[in-house]
Length: 120
Image (cartoon, rainbow, N blue to C red):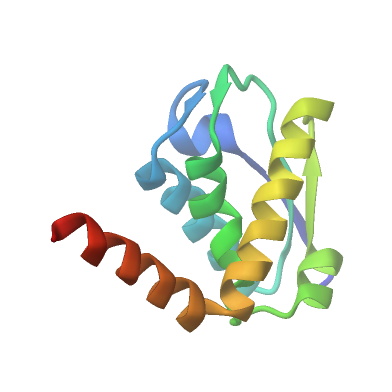
C-alpha cells in the first residue's frame, strides 16, 4: 500500500459530536473501504467536540475482529490531530477490543448469563 489518505472524522460524521455507534460505523466503513482500495489511512480527530468510547468501539475497535492483523493495522492506520486524553481513550478501546475478540465466546457467554439472571 503506497497511497495514504487522510480521513477526517468531522467530515464523515458531519460535525463535532462523535457519540453514536451508527456514526462510528460510518468511520469504520470508510477505513475499510480505503484498505480494500489499497490505501493506508491517517485518521484525523481535528475539530472533535464530544467523543465517547461507544463511538470508538464501532469506528476502531471492530477493526480488531480478525479481518485485519494487528501488524497490518499498525502499518496502515495512523491517528492525527488527537489530544492526549482522546489518545488514551482510543488506546483503551483498542485494548478492550483485542481482549474481547481474542475471547469472544467467553465474553458473550458471560454477558448472556448476566442478562439471563436479570430476567429471572
